[in-house]
Image 1 (cartoon, one colour):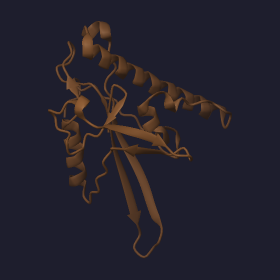
Image 2: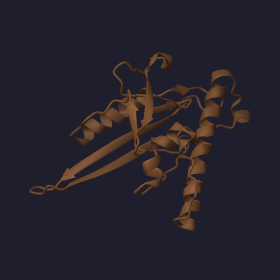
Image 3: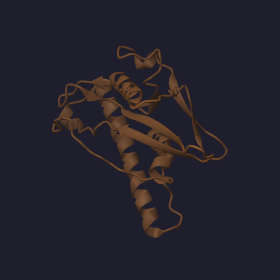
Image 4: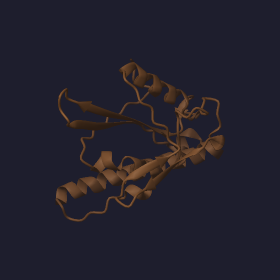
Length: 189
């Protein structure tokens, strides 16, 4: 799932290629049912059996992402990307099923508009990137406050952005959360 300017796009859709224009792509719609669970319309699901198949999908999605050039970075991601892996395990001879969900999230970096000399479409993208990162920060701060206060009612503003809505169960549900931050320019593999 690519989140570009607060709109969702399926990076693995058959019609999506690196040269596709996002304006021509079908948008992913997020709908909430009466139980508060989110469902996605126009988002493909791919069943895989091996690590290699999963990695191929991850790399395909990455090549289809929106990138652009700024004064600071000649290949800057202009969107956030969420790659969700759902794993199901069954013990031989047992009826019990264990299910796990792993979200790999690649966040576009925050933009210092005065440093990048952004204008036009790049400026619009920067505004959406910064706003969604701010909303993610608001959710994390609210969850921290909620944890400090115990069960006391604290509003967590998940609905402020599509990203925080999509990641709701992974941010504040029955989960473990890990952040790994890296600067592409300083990371050498």
